[in-house]
Length: 245
Figure: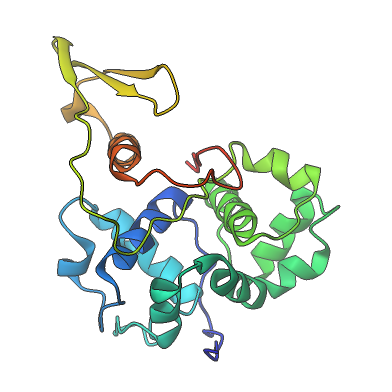
């Protein structure tokens, strides 16, 4: 079992849960965690702002070396990446890193109690505090912690809980048609595996979107593509997708 040593002075994460777990899934698909987290690991599709948020997340969870100038991965990250079932491994991390919040009592804790504890742990204020709380609730739910109704309601849509296999069999994914409908408009039609379709229409000039909206569109595209590429298997324990931001 990996010994998880708390990172002094680290900030509770406020990144999108979907973006964080998509990055972990990318590492799991590679089979092992890299020695360092550099630009070649992030890839070209993650913005500088998202990389910074994910770096904060990885440091807080003990997956990056605690020294600010280093981005060396830890044995804890490799344990998560190589585990057949990452949930029990991730749960140990959440229980240690968020021990003050869990001590409040998640079954009947209120949003205010959780926010006050996160502030004591160094979280930011305002919308950053909201994002910090939502990340924790989504991470705790994914890890299998028992959350009460007050916190579940505060999380909005539950997190995506499907875990990608580390080395799925290669197959040709179904095509996701993209049909231009006019200037600044795109329509995506996704065929569901059981029955029916999901249609997403984007009517916005992408060059005018701010960074947050652009990242949301990219995350949405990633979710559509990952649905097509994911192997068909048992139903996830919680059927929904996270929309943190």
